[in-house]
Image 1 (cartoon, rainbow, N blue to C red):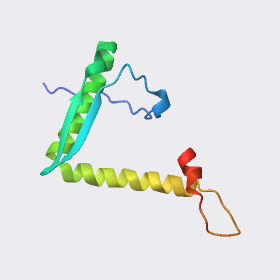
Image 2 (cartoon, one colour; image 1 turned 30 degrees about the horizontal axis):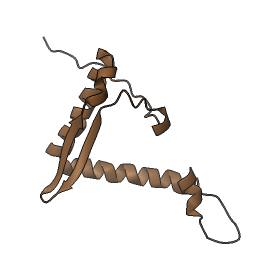
Image 3 (cartoon, rainbow, N blue to C red; image 1 turned 120 degrees about the vertical axis):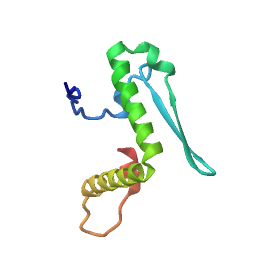
Image 4 (tube, rainbow, N blue to C red; image 1 turned 90 degrees about the vertical axis):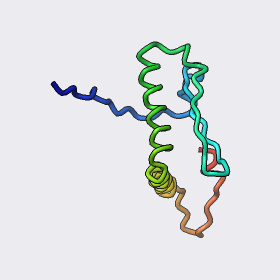
Amino acid sequence: MQLKPPKILKIKMKTNSEFDKNKTIKIYLSPTDRGFACSINKENSKNMTVNEFEMVNTIAHGLIYLATNEPDSAFSMGLSALRKDKKKTLSQKPKDNRNNIINFFDYYNK
């Protein structure tokens, strides 16, 4: 008998203002002489329900696994994500017919 993986629901990531800082698992990445190091901080996980902890902990371990076992894939995914964010930002830039000057403070304040 073959087990089916659980159905994963895609949920839009929340903005920083929507995070409950008392219910977090933090992933730390740090550059080293040989590349980078990763670790997980579960300090605030005590405030989560069992289901919340299982979901967030599993995703955190998956991200660490990807970064440490397939760093080239994680890096290229990061580049793709940065490109998509840049395209969104550029498409939202204020239009000014008089010149090509972009006020970066407008982006910083968003």
